Image 1 (cartoon, helix red, strand yellow):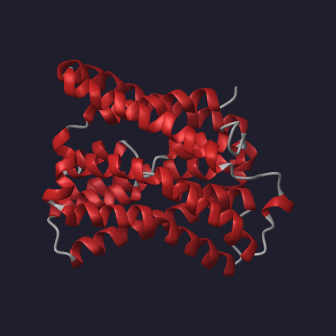
Image 2 (cartoon, one colour):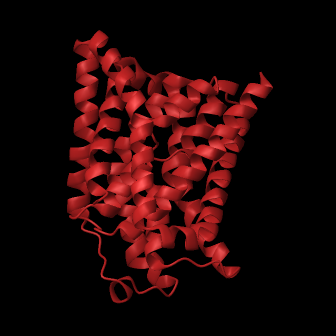
Length: 295
């Protein structure tokens, strides 16, 4: 089974569901409380890719090196926007759900442009500077135009449709959202299962090193989110939301880009996103548990 036929509808439904939860007042939050919004976006869009690249280089000095395809996959998930599940996690952690929704929506739009730019740098300069010849070592390239078009079709359009439905049919939007949020997790589990079956040997072999890299990345970025929140004297709710929002990435988008026949067309690149999704949920569920002990 080709994973692209599973991940495409999952990503589309997740983005549509995000649109269903958006309200016009969510965007007013940017003007009303710019500080937590700016901190969240800086942490997710700038710090996360920088920290990911630093971790890759630091671990390589300890002989924990990844293949070219895995490095592309690690950076791809680090450049992705926030995952829609962060809204649920923020609610469970008694965080600021409105802030979470705003950050997820904003990062989904902003990364339309930042993701291609960062990935172009990684493949054009970053990897060659580490001694990886992308074009020579593997048959892989980044068609930026196709990436932008795909992201608009699969992310912006579903979000916009969901947003419009919520404005004009709020009750229907709530009912649809209640159904979709129950479907999302089983669908993601199916996707992970398909990937594991198809790439069992590679995942098992590389899980230790990739699991370590992803865990360090998640812990480092969430710690930065907590530190920035403390330095800027944000509220407890805002801090909890930023920790979750910065650490929770849209793995489905990274997998879609990796598997897309018009972009990378390589499922190996998607494996880091699969492992990131697993470690992300485990670590942030533990964080949610800690927040409950603090109340």
